[in-house]
Length: 300
Image (cartoon, one colour):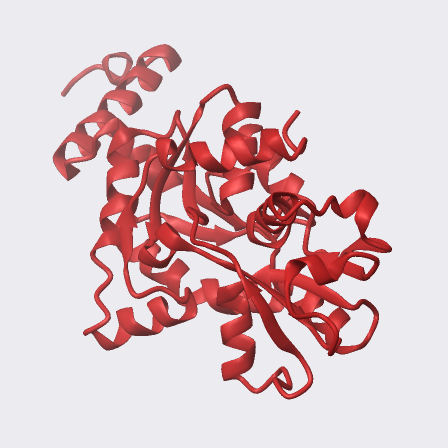
């Protein structure tokens, strides 16, 4: 029989033994440092608030569940108060991935000194468009807006402000001096409400939200009509921070790219995202947006 003192393990030795045992178990389970970190993490996801918060949550729910399966991480959707908060949340490491418009991506890219990476975009975002709407029977082209009241969406919106402003300037209309009054509704659906409710003569919003509201019979097209549609431009994308591990970036990218509209579950996700499919994207795609922002004096 062994002496009792030989069974005693000092506290440092006990800690070392526990650490070694844990390391051995992790090795047996096949964990790498990255996958262990992922197992303990939450993937914090957000989106620019270009629609009502309840609508954003509804659209994200099945996508979040899908990403949980594909990454093995808990995925949490964190709503933000405004467009600027989505940019600040990502670059200040309070968010891991954000659904940006082209302009908010450019803002995040500039603010972070190129420390953000766009992963994927919808195929529709290669040639995205804005629509100008009105209830005024005297408005038929951009030039007819002179002296009228007008609303953009959010100040940081690509399709609700930056690109509509750019096309107004190209038509030799300075919104700040040639229009009677301009407003910012804050979101695309709010722009439709402002125009249809007679608060302004006209407004601009993204074509995707317009088409959705028309399809859902949430807008009376006998009263509210589109009088100008812009040419196409690059817009929305899913963006992550550059310090996200490459393995996790690949998992997320592959998850989006493998969504297939011929599968019932995937079709629901794609329809909620108003996407036919997702395709890879890159920062270079948004150079024209960045130039437009500089030209319009919106990028400081």
